[in-house]
Length: 264
Image (cartoon, rainbow, N blue to C red):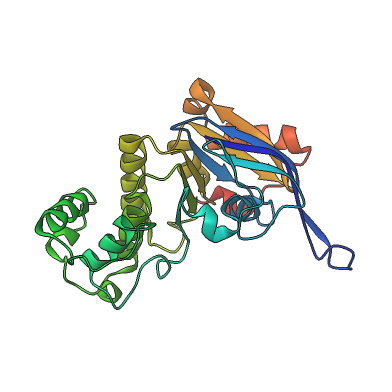
């Protein structure tokens, strides 16, 4: 479903501020893979996600999503393949519009515009059922303005909108980092349910090692623009924070661990 082959990305090339952010990264995800991505600041996690999303072009290598080579496509043309949830709960929704109106926009993404009726009764009932699965009481607030929701409610809504059309690839960029621990746990549980239910191929960045271990069927740790650790299957199920740090030390040749990796 996702094939990343030998991608490189350098910022400010040829200047004193030159930074090689990705160094020949290759990664293949099969249909339904849920991969958590972890690493310290500057490891290349967000650069990798942004390269896949088309926020900036890569200097070398290729990116294929669902059999389509998107390497040279701009971000807006890749949107047909990708659902994305950002770290900031304010992104991904229209604050001045109602919950049902936001969901309708997401449901009709990519469709032609015409003189059709507004949201139908059947659509509202479908949205109510989907919102009920989040367990946040939003199913009774369909006509509420999104700007009145809490950060956690808004992020959960964004997740629902990003997955409504079952994208070929779901990108989650630290989507619980700005939430309190209790709300973050609810959003992560909702994420797990939606990904498993729809068998969505997913890349999730997190700074929390325990979350990276608890969720998904595969874990990769990045270090200095490369994938330093890649574990899946039974090995991942048995993984602990201590064992992951040991794997990282062996792979990177460094005993240093970013403090943020140790958040629980």
